[in-house]
Amino acid sequence: MSDQLPPTGPSSPPPAGGIGQPPYAVPPAHPSQPSYAGVPSYPGQPGYGWYPPAGHGFDPADALVTPPGAGLGGWFARCAGAARRGWRQLLPILVLTQVLPATVVSVLVLAVDSSVGWDDQLAGDSAALPANFWADLATLLIVLIGGSLLLGLVQSVGWAAGTWVIVRQAAGERADTGAALRYGVRRALGLWGWTLLITLIVTAGFCLCFLPGLYAAFAFAMAGPVYLFERHDPLSRAHQMLRDRLGLLLGRVALVAVAAVGVTLVANIVEAFAVLPFGVTPLDSPGTAVGVVLTIAVVAVLALPAHLVQLVGLVVTYAEQRAYEGPVNGVQLAAELG
Image 1: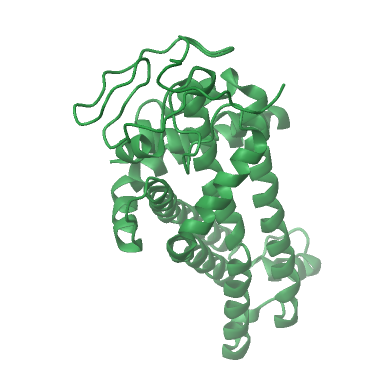
Image 2: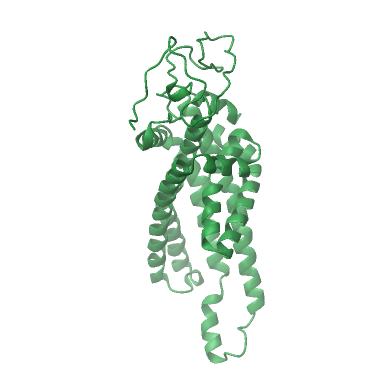
């Protein structure tokens, strides 16, 4: 089937529903905009140049929303456009909320990890636990779990702020880094809470069997954007998106996951080899401590593209899913973010 969108216009109103799509209600025109028969209008939407392909009233040239039928090429083009428009704002946001906190947590865990000496102590007396075993283990777990929780909260600030930048720029609005971070702080707590719940569900699924955990990860991939845009029942809403368009959503999320995980694995491998010259206890001396901290920070920067790919890919994928459900454009999505 061709991906070409049939040209339509005011003289050719869209049908009640596209192929495989339920009919949608056409909202009333905004008072400040002219109305065409069958073509919906939204506040801030231009009153002309709208072509409703496949029964959907939206702009096929929208910078954020991929039209139904545009295929993978249209999705890629909008991902690339979002990254090109917003990298000056997105990179500082991701450094502050993803790279820097992850570096701090890694250094703290390395500082309290006493397990490197346990093998030698067990070799001397395998029947006895190493000295201060329980206290050291408790300290490590507290730092690891507490650091991960705080890291998740700070990361939620970045995901919300980055989403705000991407959508506002696509709508042609100004989006500076400071305003984005302020928005991220306002929305971080709720996003963090849902992210914790999703993490628990996915972890439980992987513990029970690999496939349930993998399915849960894909089923709830849209939960973050759903919360930011719709603020209502993100888990069931995200799952419904997957059920409605299994192949399309699965393919988009899989591409994002492969790219992000691939970059992260490369960064982790580089870090594992880069810290070897500093020994098993690099923080015992000032010289090696500075070296290992700098190494961890540099490697964390190498993982920056993974965060960018994940952020841009999921936001553009969410916008595409909304287009399959009814008329939507970047201006409307920017207004929904608040």
